[in-house]
Length: 131
Image (cartoon, rainbow, N blue to C red):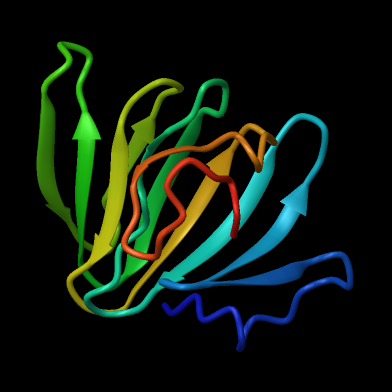
C-alpha cells in the first residue's frame, strides 16, 4: 500500500502543505483531532522539536525512517521504523523524523497545528512555527 498524497482521492477540504523536507496532506481537521499523511524525501528530516500541548501518533505506511524520541526517563533514543510500525509522541517529548528512504506515514494528533518548539532545524526555522 502506498499513501502518496498525489494519488489519493480526497475531499475538497483536504490540503497539501509543502515543506522543505517533503510535504503533508491534512485530510482531517476538527476542533478535537487532526489526520495527516507525511511524505519525507530520502535523507531529509524534520526539526528536532517538541510540542507543548499537541499529542500525536504515527504509523509508517512505506519506507524506512529514523525516529529520535525522548523517553519518559528523559533519555533521547533513536530507533529505525518501517512499514506497519507505529509510535506515540506525547506532548513535551523531544522528537524528530528522518527518512532513510522515501517514507510515507500517517499521523493522527490533537489539532494544535502551530504548536511546535523547534530546537534544531536543517532549514533555518529554529524558534518559529513556519511551515
